Length: 178
Ligand code: IMP
Ligand code: MG
Image (tube, rainbow, N blue to C red; front, side, top):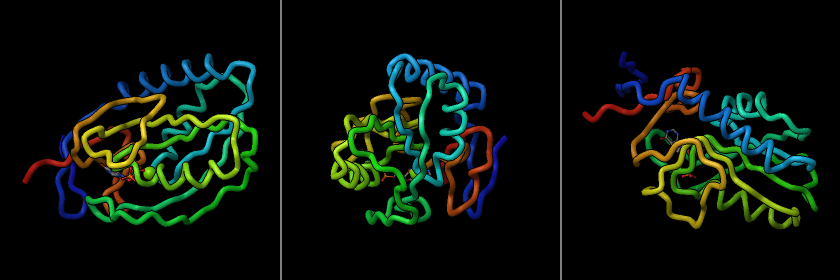
């Protein structure tokens, strides 16, 4: 069923079941890869709140979790400017970092954030993202763990919003061409 948020119409795109199956697989891979280590998951708010929760419910190892908040999107477009709203509260020196993102679009947010955390000299940094738009990327950012590769279309749901709306949808929806 299609839905309307503000002035745009969206159609079903990735169903809850498919999202949850993929996340379970990602969590298993991470649990294997980080066995015996103590990684710090850093979740990128707001969009990744739901993905982070579901991913870590299926992660079987011991870990720490922290949250940061950056903003770059206005409406349907990446604004090109990245502002930090909530900062880091863990010392990353010598730590294994796993950044948890909802979606990599231009890659600018992660590019800015990676420069910031590299200064703290972590032992390793990996990126897990639920969604990736390879044709939109403008910065040298590649996910190490990826849920779904998607075309350069605007989507909402499962944490992602259109001007504040749609984050609470269980499924992912794609914008309907006008
Ligand atoms: P980037 O800095 O251009 O990679 O954009 C990253 C952020 O923009 C993501 O973490 C999302 O919060 C937001 N974003 C990118 N694409 C979409 C989309 O299709 N729908 C909703 N938000 C998006
Ligand atoms: Mg985000």
